[in-house]
Length: 627
Image 1 (cartoon, rainbow, N blue to C red):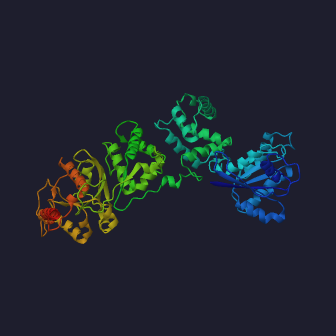
Image 2: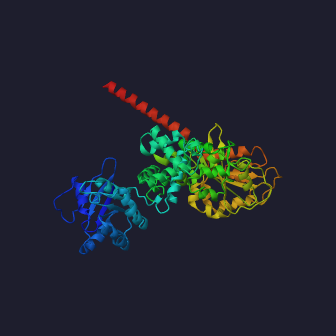
């Protein structure tokens, strides 16, 4: 529950205590009241969650220490004046005093005793007195004219004080420039983007009605909608606004600017807070980064709801229906976010996933990219789900778009691993064909030019297993970071499969694999597949004590698979990798001794026990019969 603390300040005899007394008793007190009333606390009103404490103060010099203490504790100052002298003191004494004390809270300016100057209109008071001082001191949030004697605007003035704290104007509107502030504009642009469901750049009548229900929990009358459109058309400098089928972004911003100019900034705050903005106009921390812990040996994946969201997002932004997101379409999609995730930049997006002939990411590549991001950095996916407007039907927030897989502690255990995203490290000597293998995984033509891999390279794509189940496979070539990664146990724990590769035409290539396994014994704990690349070339005898086939036989593993990126059958190799990750026990080195089969022994022991029990039962029955 929020608490608003109001300090009533101003010269002596301007009616500070009378305002407070009139609020409490709901009528003007004609009898003499004490100079300073004790603080009062008002409970929350219906529909609010704000407790209000109002503190009366004295302007006497001997009370200056107490005054300083109270204004430093308050959230808002109600600064009261009632005549020309006390008005002049606002700019000459009170506002400079607050600044000298380092007090930076909103100030509500109140012209009290309006019954005394009944001949002067409120508009004249505002124009001649209030607006000049508000222009000079930006701390002044709003102004109002009151009369404690006539009980005029008493409730309203304290409501303004509450609103100055709960719905401050300063972060969203610059009264000097008469414009919305840039941070508010950016936030409202994101709101518009999320409400423009079909991404046509206009809010249709249905989208406006949905927006109204979401923000204010009540429908918008047709007459009110027509009035809003007329107001936007009158306030717009473009003559063709009336021809549009809906409200565009300029009209939406203009509408909110009019709310601010008319003192209805609480309407803007209701909108912003419904879309999870904090008082600093940034998205709330617990919304962007909700609690989501992945247990050890488990992983995070997109749930069906998460996949549906990213599919819909892709289809809506593929405006030309060419099956790929162009640079402009991708930029528009990421408009309400800080931009493409930094991890995507590090992985050389979009070259790390599936693209069409024009180089644009396809739906297949789009889903693969988010699958990889969720696997490696689930909190990044949650952050972007928040930016992009994912809404869970059950109210669980963005975490409903993710799921946690069952932990897999024993990799050599028989059976299927219950996950659909797998990470495979591709290891091997330089020029063994690792980069070409990654390119083939993304259906790219073979390039004979050799480029040494320095930074780690990643390729992610979907693979259809036997039986029709689809999974996502992440192939990672480690580059110069290979030693650091293979020494990092956390990196090895995250890996599902090792793909050892060697150039079958290079007699020195297989030695690198033997060296790796000797230098990093922890690799023995991971399922692995041995692969002889460049199988379309003449096969060379490896200059090692043991040849690859014999080495795998010693481990009681399948012989190396001979593949070439130039063969059409290369796709079957990726299916083999995915299935080896899905059933890791099949890709484990086995010990020299096979486990002894004791099934016959267990059957014999069971039969002996049963026979003994039957003999005892028969003997006991005969003995009881003899008696």
